[in-house]
Length: 239
Image 1 (cartoon, one colour):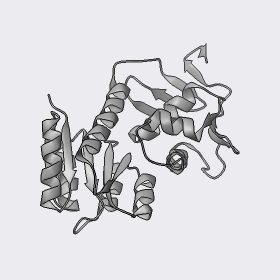
Image 2 (spheres, rainbow, N blue to C red):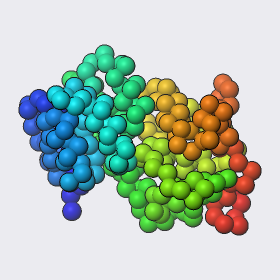
Image 3 (cartoon, rainbow, N blue to C red):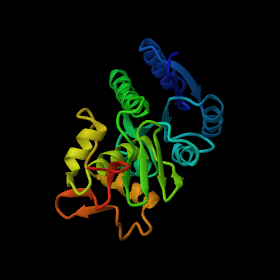
Image 4 (cartoon, rainbow, N blue to C red):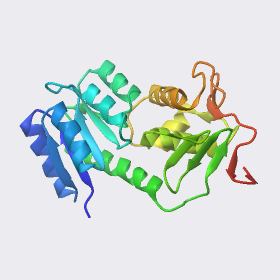
């Protein structure tokens, strides 16, 4: 069955351009033309990925992203106007996985869709490894679930990938450049600030005090590490 992509944009020619190129690439494409319609389509159709314009009537793309993130970790690619740096930063902070600046290359957009869905598929594949544990955190790659002290934690795809990498290598320091290349890929055009924003969001979900983190700590001038003396790959197996 073809993977479903929801394209949300109020410009018909943009929708048709994206639909054509994604359809040619083998995806089933749905569309919505305003924010309210988009939220409804997400709930009804459960797409595998969303391409979401920021400038939408009624409910803008940033608010749509916020609403979706309260209910789903579906990958989201934001479409932003050229020079809309603030919108891109806010979009990443509230949970978008990537962004593409208008005007864009349809080939580049399709490539980014493929890359994100490939990584999401790898995350959802049957058990690549045993559950990872550290403190009160448990991350299960097989079910793509995370819990903290027995309570489920909802993470976006990128947040999950970051936590899996850090938790899987406790006390190892990862540079921002390494995290950007490993999680977002060599074809990503963002900056290391993208890593900082996702780490910040991740801390908000797993730390008692995000301002004074005890799990994901900053190594000044270098990057980040998961600090947990009892972090294990599975029960009774130390990493």
